[in-house]
Image (cartoon, one colour):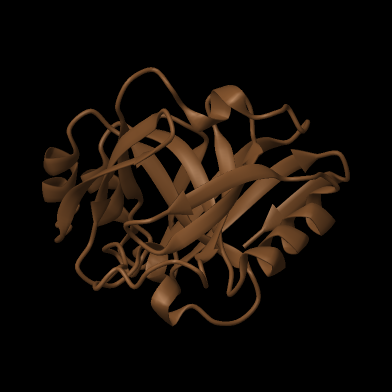
Length: 201
């Protein structure tokens, strides 16, 4: 597995974009819509192979007839770092290692095509601390086409009461990620930005 991107969930896309742009001192790039899940996003480069997305329910999108990814159906409160996403070559194998239910969906937008593991509840295992799983199909990747906003991820900390089990399930993981034991699950990310060092959690 390799860290692919981070997701900021928000009640509305505008609210999430304002949160990130104010915190980082940048302008987010356009994203798109996910017709199959009734969501939409905006994107921010974190370097050549990594990016940040703000994602929210699309008020003009269709009801997917199933729980949306990233727990968005039950999301409330201010925008926050809600998920991390890893890319892997064998999603079913990774799902088995993480004891993740659900299905592998084939998705596309323009020339981007990918597979994603979508759980039955919309929430990943380990109280949402397990990563979402993605496999890009073809050479196209969002990070490669985003303008460089001079933002970089320094560290991602994944806190879980079951940290040792999660680390074992993840196996060899590429990227600045640390899985730590904590009574309460949570994500904390540290970024270098035009406004200096920024921590989101």
